[in-house]
Image (tube, rainbow, N blue to C red):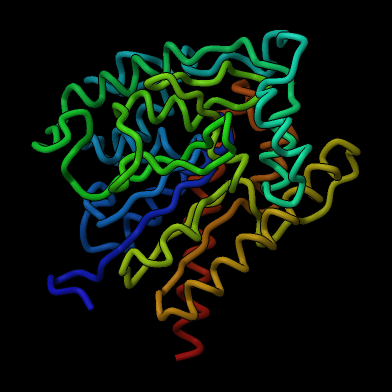
Length: 329
């Protein structure tokens, strides 16, 4: 149990590309209303891919109101120095290089196909991406520059544990930057590694090791909190959906199938954490959100619409959950 006035709380921010980040930012005000302190100060923040960007901003002291303003293009200060349109490269990747992204990982997965997570195996065979994250690195550096550095780890911040999830692209091993025993990295380098989608972006190079998007191992990374000693966890999972709805568009029907698989995996991890006595609150996009997201989560042209929709739907979803809890009590 917590020794302080608040329960020990974790915030899990999942993968989901440009639109996933917009959706999570739209959901943050509704989550913030249910806590008696700021989201910036919860005990543990886990960020995977797009979630690593949102988590880094929170840990660097950016308020939810400032993040909302940034989505609308009206933010000042460090977060307003770089627009989200600069960070997003466009709806489609540059033409990748015509050879596997990780021959070593591809060979390992070929020789031992059951030893590797299937999505990690698939990522090894994707062509090597050409995209870069210079603007994203600059954004996180700017945010970190106005934050208080941790005295024993000056490249991170001191508000609480910040775990940024990536995958070592040569071994296939999940790496949790910011956790005790993880490889050294600056906050900006860790975020770039976590966001380096195989086939789209070049792998991030940190101290001679190559890293790619943590979402190829898990789009939410909830399971890593099993032994974190938390009492309550909030999960924002843009690639899952507790209420998928229906679409007639073939590409979106395929996307819904993938989303259903991700949701099933997420719910297994939720049940495992609840079995340990942890209160787990899950928020995912609903049918209205999915209708404006479309099938391409990297399409920045939909970003503002997704964000504004999430402001409404997320608040409504949590209000319905509150009502159901009150009725059951």
